[in-house]
Length: 548
Image 1 (cartoon, one colour):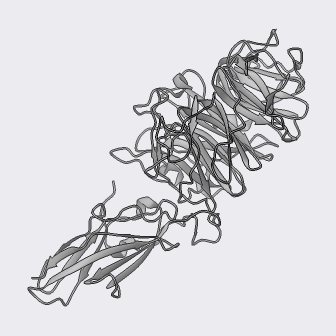
Image 2 (cartoon, helix red, strand yellow; image 1 turned 180 degrees about the vertical axis):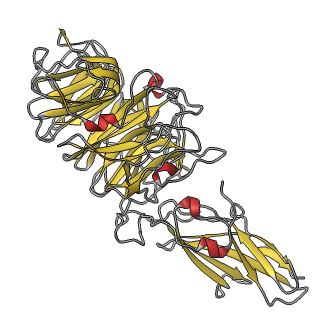
Image 3 (tube, rainbow, N blue to C red; image 1 turned 60 degrees about the horizontal axis):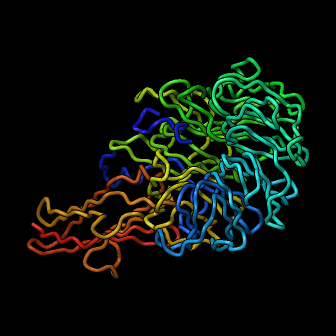
């Protein structure tokens, strides 16, 4: 990522067009009310009230109506409460109600160091934890622990790692850890290890791949439990750098390397690039990465096939992507993307604009093109998904030295949850945690972005009897379709011009309309209105034009 951001592992022109151009054909866009029935529906961009934290959230895990949060924080407070008020002590882990966002008061384990990752056991009874802690509730737990969700107590599970664990995944017969450690249960294991779910310090399993170079940042396990994929900054695994450069697929039984063709296309490793996260939906696995100038070639997200290890698609955006979560039809990303035009998405702008949450289709919708403008690493000719019209607005936090917004994303069939260090979402104070919901249960009150004086309708009279009105495009955060209505004299009158635009936000460009037949010397008032498919309205201020 060639911008002002420091390497992420150190912390863990639009021009006005005429009205006729604005209504010309544009690529289809999906949102909460897509016009194209072949495109999926996203969640709403409405900010749902959620418990807040005073630090950063690294992971959320949904279990029924409970969400477990791990990170680096020491207190929680209700939605709407200002920092320092109504605080409840929480030591790097908390739980809240998915349906309400309210803090669960009876769950407050005390970790003496941050929680980096969590994984649910297949029977959903146990929450396995990874991080930099050495004690939980006063008991020695060296960077690995487990919480019994029924009793809310720490279990006897206590494998011993000599340094930080960044990632954890679980099956019924094994718990996998990745990180920066060099020993597990007092036995040599470099950055990847597997232990028994009953490990009390003597449950180490034989898997022992040789990981060289940087750390392991994340890992996922196949649905049959026989394979894992690891991702990170490492540069070789079992002596191989392809596969093995930032990505590797391993046999659980032996730790031996398996074919991974996607690693020929996605190459992130070393001191200035890495794979940052991995997720799995059983048939595919997904990854994200960053590149700070050398050593890597991907900052977006990708999808690959578990059966073959082959690339399904990649979105070739620029701007580090920290996390990804697949739902049945939509894939959500947490990032600070600033240019996605090589993948059919929004362009780079000056000054640069940042987008901390995005959504794409699950399936392939096009082909990536070369980056001939900025010289970023690119992937021309590879398959890509389609970006969907879902762009909440985030306010960066300052808890980490990276000063970012979103770091993690999790979802189920009804909700999408983001966590990180953000301070506001869509201008609403909501620190560190937030929920979004599908249209059927969301308020659906997010309308076109600009209103009042911030939506600058201008008017002039270029010649006798005419008034020319100009206004910027006014896109919506979760709808591609906006209907523009221009009024003269009264908002209760019939619009003198109506135009419906279905386009990505960056193609809602400026529009012009000339009102004719006005009496010379008269004063005419005009107002422009933007309406989304759910009836949310934004209006400009009135502008008065004196007719020549």
